Length: 185
Image (spheres, rainbow, N blue to C red):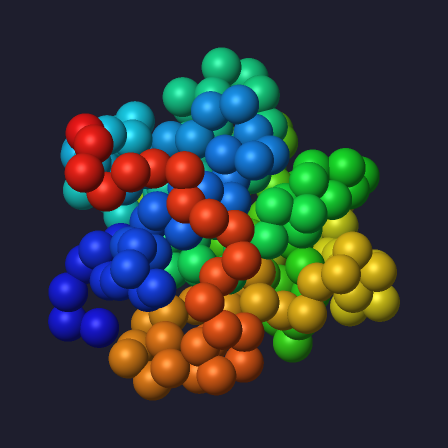
């Protein structure tokens, strides 16, 4: 998009705040990974330094998670629904990701045992697509995620201004009000 996607606004709030609001309804702690600061939200840089991308971010979250599984949502997925996240956390075996033409690896759950595979993918800059099947995880079929009331909005990514407009056309302004006040922090 030519700028930090976390700071792109939609309906008067940043994409980061929309994701934070949805996640806060489902998990006890929300951490922004891949940056050092996030306007009043706990944030941690990817570790080790120099390794970036979704695999590095998820590996960092698992290292910081104290042996707990994590639920992951990309900062560019402002239409994520809390009900989808809650349902994903119940899917076994984990890791679990919706299958919608391909695995939606940035709207997924990852158990601590995923860490070595994720670290390897991050070091080698490989796709996350094969990680879930290799770990015996679950590709959540469309008929299952649709039964949750999901229509694909939770993983609609805003990578371009056109993606933002397409999301607005399809889904309108996100339903989950952000919990994070733009003025705090």
